[in-house]
Length: 316
Image 1 (cartoon, helix red, strand yellow):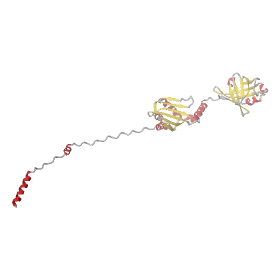
Image 2 (cartoon, helix red, strand yellow):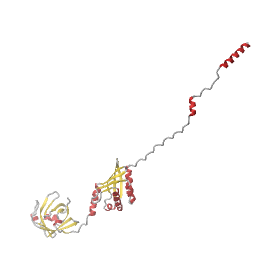
Image 3 (cartoon, rainbow, N blue to C red):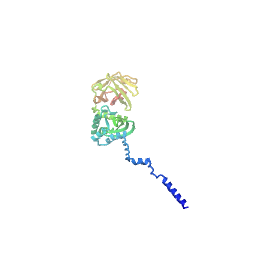
Image 4 (cartoon, rainbow, N blue to C red):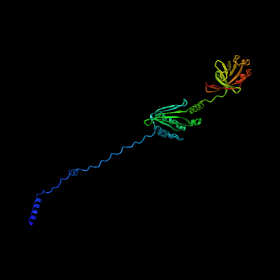
């Protein structure tokens, strides 16, 4: 039995000696490569694109340019500020002013001269935006100044249209409304008209030539038309003729001849009559005539619209 055990021990030892010795397994390729990789810095992300500042709206530009004029004390600095919103070749136009007042200013220098000429007049502007369409801003602008205040036509009101190019005003047109045009034109005519002369005898028939309006019995309108030939006619506003004939002029007197005719002329109106003619002049224009009977006039109708009556010119 001992022999058998010893024999198995020898066999086991012999088999163990025949097995190959273990070797280390190779490291995976990935691990070897990772061992040689140099770490790279983390890239910096690009900065965000800059945000653009939105351009001001056109109506805001108009108000920035003109708002400072809504004051009773405007300085030259305000003019400089306003002009900075205008293009060099801008055109400023005013429509509806009387013809003696300039209405167009071409170029920023001309506009500046116009604005500066307003300063001694204590101007004031009030601008109210009405609409913005594309490059066009429409506003209602009211204007005060010492002359318009004195003439009691302030404020003058009109539509103001601004046209923009590249953020600058290239055109401004201010059009007075009909009411302001009418009031200002009338006030200007009165302010510039010469003082009427005192009433005096007419020096010639030329001072009496024209179409004149008077009254019959201070109620009914009557027209008296006199030509430089001495031909005259009287008629009602509807055109119905009262009488016609000829007069002569001498030493301030209008002398009716006996040639009167007409559908209602009586025999009494065919007799001569003499009237002194008084006139009031304004410059070179006769603005009023008045007749005074010398002696008697048997024509009752003629007496009614001539004697002591004041006649005024009929405008065409």
